[in-house]
Amino acid sequence: MKYTTRYIQLPSILFILTFFFSACTILAPRAPERPKDRISLEAEKTISTLKNQNLKLKTFKGVGSIKFRGSKKNDIAGRIAWVASMPDRIRIVLSSISGQPMVSVASDGQWLYLISHSSGDYYKKPATASSMRRLLGIPLKTEDMVNILAGRVPIHSYNSAVLTDNRSQVYSTEGHTVSTRNEGEDSGQNGYVLVLKKKWGDILEKIYLDEKKKNVHKVEMFDATGTLAYRVEFNGMRTISGYRVPSRLLVSNNDGSGFHLDVDRYWTDASVSPSVFVLTPPE
Image 1 (tube, rainbow, N blue to C red):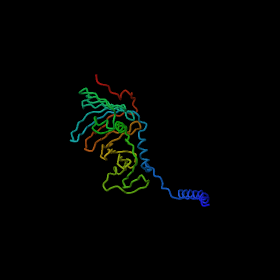
Image 2: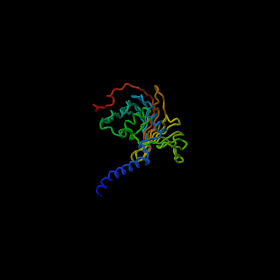
Image 3: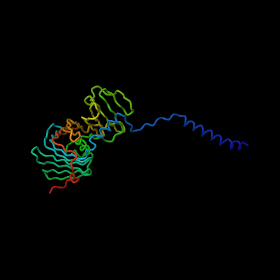
Image 4: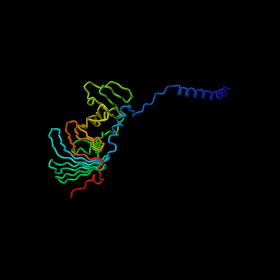
């Protein structure tokens, strides 16, 4: 008889337990899921604006003067000419002041080519994140160099972003504003600073904008250790065929070495053959 009672009661017990745990699941408040890559509306709008700058500019050419500065402040001046195609194809010729070609470098997006006209040496190797270091002394990605010359801001892959204004407010990844700027911190010439961060909060990039959050006057890139890799200062801009492009650039790294570029002439929407971005060994 006891066996029968237990047998009859078991389904009832199971039903009660099932109902109880189901009710707990329904009634217990669930913590809201937080998107891991969520950014503030203000930062998102600013990033979208930057990504759309000169979006229709696909090919361009330019000539100008360039001055290299080493860590010991020894300057070397010369001439520079370039042709580029978005997103990562470029050809650069560095010449002496008298116009004698010294070095040619090109990238077709896959390979980096370099010719020393004085020695006749020829190099070909895979394009890497620091492809421009050998030529310009700065760990620039080829794609970054193309973007900078096109008047665009290189925006690397990030996980979060904050936008700081000149009133010490931060539009954070939580969507609200908090006051966190330290006294004396650069606020971007009374404008804004857009900070892009990696997954663990390490700073990847700082973009300094004007008060309208449209025009950039400085960009700082950081390496994996958080050390400044290089900075780009847009010291002059001009409008050509509806595009706002640089007329003066200053690119430097953490020890102050880098180069200063003054653009003399600039052509937008240039007709460019893909073969321009491939260099062959000199005969």
